[in-house]
Image 1: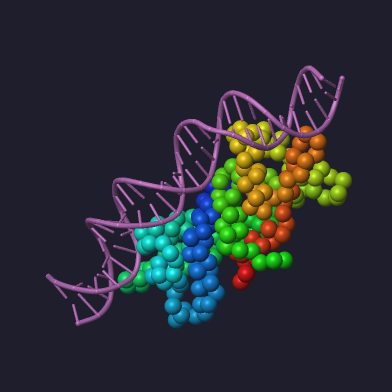
Image 2: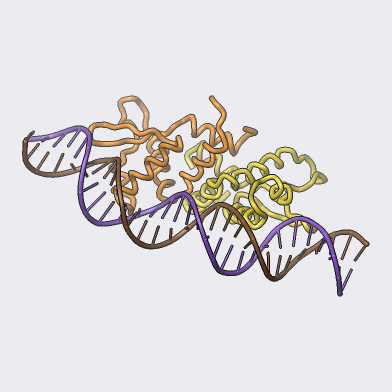
Length: 102
Length: 102
DNA sequence: GCTATGATTCGATAAGAATCGAACTATAAC
DNA sequence: GTTATAGTTCGATTCTTATCGAATCATAGC
């Protein structure tokens, strides 16, 4: 696993620093924990996020891109729908940042 | 250890999302790891931070307050000098956020 | 008390970010 | 191909943030 730069770290934290983006990220986290096999639904649906949060679709779309560019999530398309998966490598890096020498 | 709210989480991440604040926080982290006994110097000196970063004293002062209000560090005064210590409880909470169910 | 130095407060400015509505693109279903 | 729905792009607006310089406060040493 390659080392994370200060720039990447700051970008990831900035992404999580917005309350609505944090909620989106937590939805992805929570969904990730529910998923079991490859036949389960793959990830957290943007559609659900848009209907759950009190912000419009354009804003959600923007936030999802920010989280993706920060390397926190991966986005895939399933027909009309988008779903988000956690980027496990980044999660590990962030855990290590707080938890060890890095 | 009390649970962390979404608001507190977002505030902590937003604090770490600024590149200069991240550098300050990493200085505190690094210093924390060096410290051994109670007779060691207690924490990371703001004075050193101001001379190391390419931003003015007022800005550093502002950033330190943001980190403190976010619960990431604690600031103490030693005569003319301020020093920063890591808030270990917050560090634990942030580790858990990425690493477990929370 | 005076001076030097570390740090804060207070505007001001400039840059960036969050959000929206309207128009648009993409996919599915028929 | 038409229609309905999921999501994006674009501009505009509004709010927040980072930073600075100047003035001020706080402490130490003399």
